[in-house]
Image (spheres, rainbow, N blue to C red):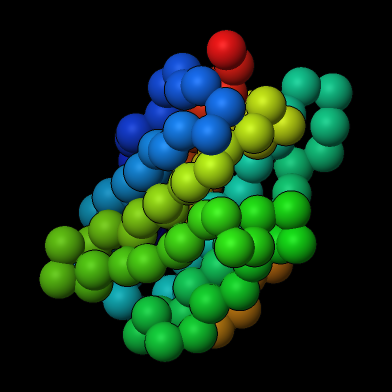
Length: 123
């Protein structure tokens, strides 16, 4: 079993920045691909970024490419999402999730999910 806990959300003005953290408990964290997902009110949950177990491979949704950066520190069992140039449309609950079936890929039905952290971008 793996437990994930997100933190770092909050209220920020358009153009501002936030850094989300996802801390995992469990000895196999460094074997899993980790993804960040978000869900806005009335919308489906979407994958916005994924990082491989080694941290070498990353990918991003077009909506956040060039503004968000995913990284991980396996020694700290933590994955980060640096969010810059935030827009009102980035407002959502952000979740991190782990894929126990892959070291590289994130999928819709990830193995483990955190509880989420709210990000609100508003002036």
